[in-house]
Image 1 (cartoon, rainbow, N blue to C red):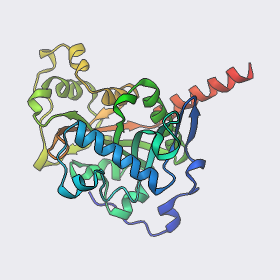
Image 2: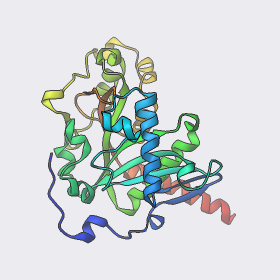
Image 3: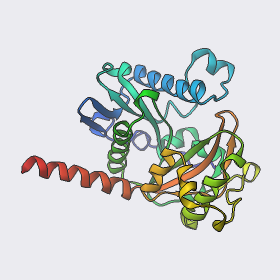
Length: 283
């Protein structure tokens, strides 16, 4: 799904250009913000390589294996959201989590969004207002805890609020490329969290994998939900939906589903948290 080019440099870059003015939260030893230099982006790409290729057994191209970095054509145009544990070091050395954020102007530079290679995202491209594709989410293995994930969500909430994002979307993964192993969670997601038509993406016909392989009354929903990966559960708690059809990603050794979240739910949750903190300070 190609999107229209954006001609104005101001539209391409957005304002302000300083990441410190967009996302900046410090909570104890943790900090969430956008990458500020090439060294931090390189560290985020190295973290992605360790998680996706070494831990999750994605299959790297020779050039990817040689540099031990997860890099593609979207990296130069996106914003890289980072969580840093400052006990491990400042700057690149402290990075323990990352998300890749692509708005319309960034996608326009490339001509498409990443998820368009797997899904028909026409509903997202045509959606009124600003949209955000979030992807390449990963956290260092020994930092996978509630604190790190909450910092990522707080960063996304601030980013979405700043750019007035209406909808966030992207690919989320279940491990492995045999969809029969995921019949339970895929069926549950389809039956209980299928997106309404106006925001529903569909897997490309050439890659479409049926999700509802089990009848609605053929499984225990609680057991099915237990098989849903934590990141997808997080989206669902925010009122997220899934698209129609899964996709096998052989390179990344995953079965992908499309996720869409109306970001007002994300930003409202953060704003309530922030306002509560201000009130507590004033008391």
